[in-house]
Amino acid sequence: MRLVFWPWISLFFTFVASTWSLSSDGQALLALSKNLILPSSVSSSWSASDATPCTWNGVSCNKRNRVVSLDLSSSGVSGSLGPEICRLKYLQILSLSGNNISGSIPPELGNCSMLEQLDLSQNFFSGNIPASMGNLKRVSFLSLYSNSLSGTIPEELFKNQFLEQVYLHSNQLSGSIPFSVGEMTSLTDLWLHENMLSGVLPASIGNCTKLEVLYLFDNRLSGGLPETLSKIKGLRIFDATTNSFTGEITFSFENCKLEIFTLSFNNIKGEIPSWLGSCTSLTQLGFVNNSLSGKIQASLGLLSNLTYLLLSQNSLYGPIPPEIGNCHLLEWLELDANQLEGTVPKELAHLRKLSKLFLYENRLIGDFPENIWSIPTLESVLIDSNSFTGKLPSMVAELKFLRNITLSDNFFSGIVPPKLGVNSRLLRINFRNNSFVGGIPPNICSGKGLRVLDLGLNHLNGSIPRGIITDCPRLQKLVLRDNNLSGSIM
Ligand SMILES: *[C@@H]1O[C@H](CO)[C@@H](O)[C@H](O)[C@H]1NC(C)=O
Ligand SMILES: *[C@@H]1O[C@H](CO)[C@@H](O)[C@H](O)[C@H]1NC(C)=O
Ligand SMILES: *[C@@H]1O[C@H](CO)[C@@H](O)[C@H](O)[C@H]1NC(C)=O
Ligand SMILES: *[C@@H]1O[C@H](CO)[C@@H](O)[C@H](O)[C@H]1NC(C)=O
Ligand SMILES: *[C@@H]1O[C@H](CO)[C@@H](O)[C@H](O)[C@H]1NC(C)=O
Ligand SMILES: *[C@@H]1O[C@H](CO)[C@@H](O)[C@H](O)[C@H]1NC(C)=O
Ligand SMILES: *[C@@H]1O[C@H](CO)[C@@H](O)[C@H](O)[C@H]1NC(C)=O
Ligand SMILES: *[C@@H]1O[C@H](CO)[C@@H](O)[C@H](O)[C@H]1NC(C)=O
Ligand SMILES: *[C@@H]1O[C@H](CO)[C@@H](O)[C@H](O)[C@H]1NC(C)=O
Image (cartoon, rainbow, N blue to C red; front, side, top):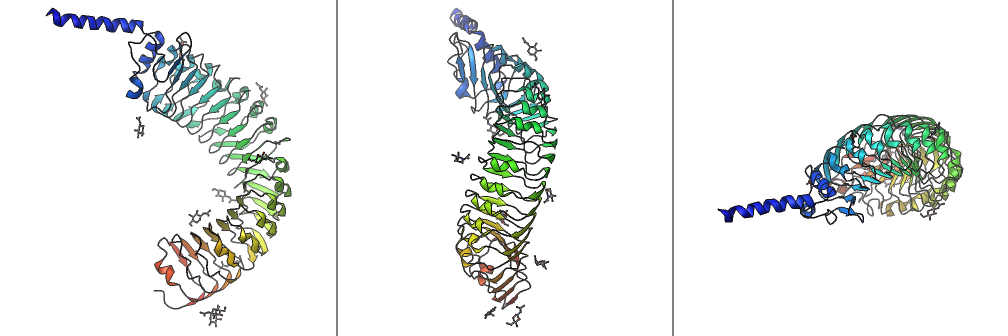
């Protein structure tokens, strides 16, 4: 009897003694791990019989064995974050990013007064951002992105002059951007994109004079963009795509540092700001689908690092400035759906990296410069619905990367290059309503990828190549009507 009894008693005392000897920080972590489900690879080292948690996986301590950092990022953690976290009185870094943690952010998190870096990104946190997080006055890095957080951004959260990087994007946050945004005077990065934020961009944003990156895209923001943006002299990236911003661009940058400036899919009026010509660091300029009017300024030709120039779907008129040909790094030139006039400058052939050239639905006239077809990188050339004349040179058939070519509703004449389709995996060919003569290129389907082939309303003759029937497995649309073709279809 005794032999059986005593080992149990001694086991009991060992357990009590060891729990007693574990530091309070260790006990706080064990309490935390009741809700936070750690994979065995982590929890195996979280032993209640240790004196301190300083050797536990994910835990770092200061010299006095107090926990200063808990980093369990991308560790296969699930469960939820309990209020015990702030029993770690000296915690400076909390990183739980890239796990499967769900539930809400505990309001008690605001009690972690020493916290400097907080990263809860890429989890399944839901519910509101607690207003108490505004008490984290030492936090300089705050990352809550890619969760399911909803509700408004608490005004208190931004009342913090130490915040440098704030990542709240890819949640379901609604309401407006707090006016207190201007109190983050150390802010360099503010990422608010992919939420449901509405209302205006507060003029107080101009107080964030150290801001370099401002992402607002895919929200429901409206009103004018504040003139105070001019005060943010070091702004490098400003992306407000897909919102409902209105009015003219009233802000400007003198010693402009912009690299990415895109306001596509808004309702911005007025002209393309002339100061943009001095933003020589610009690589991406996007104003697609706004209400811009006026001409395209020749000064855009000074932007020698530009790779994307996207001005489609506006009311721009006048000619395409030949100076655009100086933007040697340009890859995407999208000017479609405007009221551009005149001829296409032959200088565009200097754009030796161009892959997308969208000029469709304008009022362009004259021979389309043949040398443009010598740009080896061309992938999509969409120039339909203009009044272009001229011929399609045989070098079109040499373009290895060509996928989409639409020339419809123009006055192109001559033959269709007989080798078209041999060297490239074409997806879409639309030559409808031109004056092409001669036969249909026999190997037009060689790439096997063709989905759309529309050659209707031309003067093509001869028979339909057998390849179109046997070699075009993806073909969804075939239009050959209103030509002078003969022979049988099979
Ligand atoms: C996290 O969740 C995903 C799907 O929601 C699941 O496939 C994965 O196994 C989970 N990982 C862990 C560690 O629970
Ligand atoms: C911790 O936070 C909660 C909720 O924000 C608050 O009510 C409580 O007073 C705080 N406790 C301490 C010890 O600071
Ligand atoms: C921030 O900017 C606004 C408007 O530009 C101004 O009225 C306000 O005084 C500024 N606030 C702070 C805290 O600097
Ligand atoms: C253009 O880009 C290059 C390479 O990224 C960079 O070194 C250079 O400073 C840029 N030019 C300007 C004017 O920003
Ligand atoms: C802008 O986009 C909207 C919605 O996608 C579309 O209805 C409208 O036609 C576009 N505007 C122009 C000028 O293309
Ligand atoms: C090219 O054509 C394919 C097939 O019609 C289409 O899915 C794709 O979006 C087009 N790409 C461009 C850039 O127009
Ligand atoms: C053919 O193209 C011309 C020039 O763009 C246009 O005016 C005409 O309406 C088009 N005809 C048809 C039938 O689409
Ligand atoms: C079609 O071909 C016939 C015979 O070659 C020719 O007489 C006629 O003018 C052609 N029609 C068109 C529209 O090209
Ligand atoms: C097609 O038309 C051209 C003139 O445009 C003519 O030279 C040629 O013989 C015609 N080919 C056939 C097969 O009718």
